[in-house]
Each structure stands twice: as structure tokens, then as C-alpha cells.
Image (cartoon, rainbow, N blue to C red; front, side, top):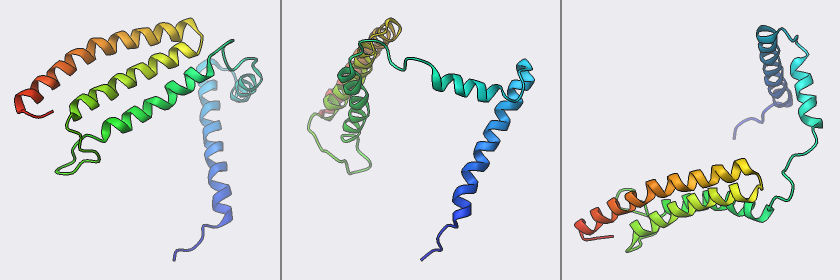
Length: 153
């Protein structure tokens, strides 16, 4: 068995990293704007006391659904990717499943943009969805063509 980490190391390392981070931010503020070494502290306090963290009337369920479904779609798409001779899930229509999970990933980003109730994120979600469809449809056709030519989906 290995030795336990000393308590001073557990406390000293985060303090050292915090000090180095603060000194880098202070030097940056002095060199860029001449604001002085207290500028990072003022900015940190300003960020902590600002009013709103969320947009008004955001749909929390849509945002959470979008945020949770994106990594879930990535994991479900990875289940049909063969790693040598083995794969997690051997579906007879693995390419179709992989493409369906890619569509779920695009839709989850759109849901997240919609649920925040902000015009900028909604436009970003629609743009991402349009780019995804423009990419995904030819991608699906190419993979299906290759799979049909190989005689296996």
C-alpha cells in the first residue's frame, strides 16, 4: 500500500495554484490597461453580485433534456462502433442506429437553444440544426450506399 498524502500538500497545492492564477491575472491587467493589481478582484466581485443568472421564463425541462441527451446520444452511437472484432452492441442495422444518434445530438443542441428563451441562443440552435441537416443527409446517403454495396448495414 502507498503512503497517504500529507495534509499540507492537499492544502498547499490549491493555494499555490490560486496564487499563481491571481498573479497572472494581475500582471495581465497591469500590462494591458494599467488597471492595477486589484482589477481581477474587482472583476470577480462584480461577477458574483450581478443580478440575473438565467433568462426570464426559460424552460428548464427543455434545457436539461437537451444537455442530458447530447452525451447520451454520443454514448449510444459509440455502442455500435466496432473495435476490432468486438462491439458493445451488435445490431443488424448499426449504421442506421449511428445516424439516428447523430440526429439526436443535433436535436439536443436545438432543444437547448430553444429552452433558454433567448433570441441569440434560439437563432444559434436553428443555425446549428440547419448546418447539421445539410451535413447529416449526405452523410447518411454515403454511409447507406457503402453499407448496401458491402451487403451489410
